[in-house]
Amino acid sequence: MLLLGLSALLIAGCSPALYPLYRDYEHDSGFPDLLPSIEEALVEAGWELIPPPAPNVVATADRQIRDWIIYRVAVQVEAVPVGSRHVRLFVHPYRIYATGSRSKIPFLKRSIRRRVIHDIDRVFESRNLVAVGTDMSRDRVRRR
Image 1 (spheres, rainbow, N blue to C red):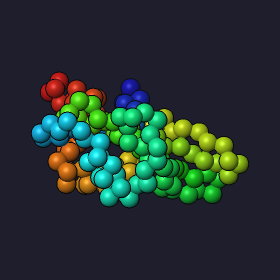
Image 2 (cartoon, rainbow, N blue to C red):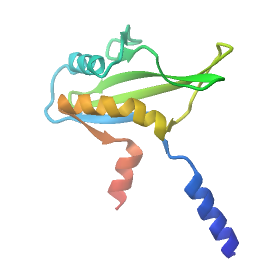
Image 3 (cartoon, rainbow, N blue to C red):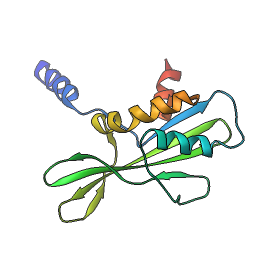
């Protein structure tokens, strides 16, 4: 029984930290139109904007963040205002293989999250958009 418990502890300690593919932000005072501020912030953080899939979305071009020999990791970001006080940032990471095929990464590993979210958080904070985490992280705080 002790061996089983130690094995479970070892496996849990070695597992990667996984994060959802989005992050929520809240503006301290409601503005009727957050889109221009979001666009400016993403450009300031070094992202190239592309035509959005919908009129209320700010979309970016793919950005390569890692290059392994057999595949590269690229990320695209979309920001969507929700009401006049909230923004949801969607992160779309992909593996692009040497053959040209792509596969979506279904979660954010800590390394991807650090490379993508850090600069965006900094610039969003300068525009009074404060990170409030994800639904899961807010639920954990509420249960305490």
